[in-house]
Length: 347
Image (cartoon, rainbow, N blue to C red; front, side, top):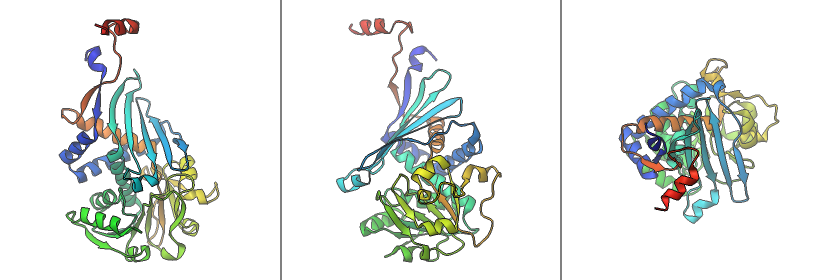
């Protein structure tokens, strides 16, 4: 590769990302992402790990999520602004980058709004496959916003569910989700209350958007033998699960220093025991141990999951047209003569 070719960085736009997803197939992409995430979780100890760098405001949060495995560096920029929906804007937008540690040169720049929805769903389903009761076939999807369809299809493709019971405080959101899932092969039931939605469900997914201490699942709603996939509580001051449920269940997290700040366990003492999900996947810790156990995945999203998703996209766009070569890096003939490059550009 010539120096000038090295300076062109593959850029995956939103349009190219959607083309890539359809080229691979939504379910195959979810399975592929889950496989990459599991592979990276199994080598968890190799990665640089830090809680995401967050800038909070009354309206939302803007975050950077960096990590490296020593050979490749990656980060994601992401925001979370619940008020945006009322203004016709996305609650979450994101982009990400991979770079070669040896040279520091970027090797991929991509949209990650669509990709984050997919990687979040893939992670949820991977963990549900690991922790949910054996033979789980029904999921309650509480919160029917932008994540809900991805979560439902991932649970079908990876965890084997065949029924989704939907509830949202906004009936239009439930109608949207039901319509989008109509051709999925899932049995879809629209429910009038959260209590109705969880009836007969073995997997309970909460994914609400309000930046508030909320109790979507109250203690009396949740019986024994379920898996709770709590993905909506993802910043300080934003929760979904009653503390009493957290105390009754066994809690699994991505990275405790981040989850204790941002997850539902921010409601508990700092020393409340949790298990890191990578330890379960590597056999260093137990997952579900009984049919009566309540397992809780308190998921806030972690940089390694984004790293996995970026790796997946980098590998899949090779030999395709689903990217633009982006002139992102200055590349003078003589690396010491950046000013000369500028001068010659005057023409």
